[in-house]
Length: 464
Image (cartoon, rainbow, N blue to C red; front, side, top):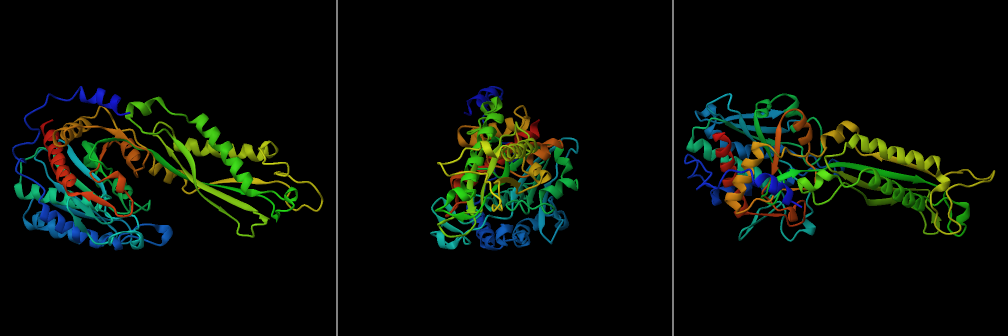
């Protein structure tokens, strides 16, 4: 699926050089012991930065920042060093951290390393084989919640800036990192949305922003939008021995969902651009949870809710999809008599003066409003970007090959940032197979390679 991208991009990349790394940066490397030491501190705080508002888990990113400042502040401008360090707080004392290694030419542009976040998804110690909130080093594997997503990146990039500050290479382009709050919970008004809205990283519109929060050490050229939905059917509670006198909401919800899915796949089929970008799957709409009224097994449930999500490739408008699905449901209600039934006694309308509920109904609710859905809209990265060519070059030199891909996972704000003039490119160096998983781990060797890839990106971009 990635071949069309490679054919287009790799053919345009400069001939292989002895090294893409500037001599100024050639002696820099990620120190294993220093990285493990910093990551030990960060993972030790992960229990306090779990993020799931529905579970009552609100992260305290202020517990992460002091460990980063311990590494970086000795090299800050306030202490006579080159690093400009800014703590950006917009709500509830939850910080975002911006670090700048200034370039010598203000009009040369910037290389941005953004998107690495200081919160994590929850972990249940009872289902892990190790303590998720303590770093466990087992050979090349670094176990702990946040090693892949995304504290492992935060630690690695922090040490990259420390290395730049120690080496003090003369770069034309500024290098900017932004560690963000509130990524996993989807909160508004806390993290990158406010950083962008405040203009705090406007300088990155002149250059490329690398969003470092994907996986598998390869460039990611596209992501999907995410829309969560709840399809509720209401019927008439009745004894299951007299099904002809009730309306089975479970059956109605199931049949209604099939109608909605069939129409969705007809109206939003695989898009021709998906092959070009290397998407593994097209847009999908599927159920993931079901709930019904609690009652006896010999009762038809009066209501049933089926919930799930839509993963929408960036070639379709999510707000249009929401409006279209709403119309599907309206049509079902207007034509409830035509909804398929199950067996000779199943029905969704009833007659009789003694019948209190005569029609079943279907409702669709969306977890997020249209503005919030826009924040999670998918992105198709600019395939002609010099920044994309830089990361492909760098990845190929360090890893031996570059295999750009696209995925129907989702990232916040990237599409909006692209619409506002940022060149967003995406990569990450953890492992997709351990993302949000029990016994999450990253490879130390991948983070060491990531350090070298980012150094090469800085070098290549500085030459342009």
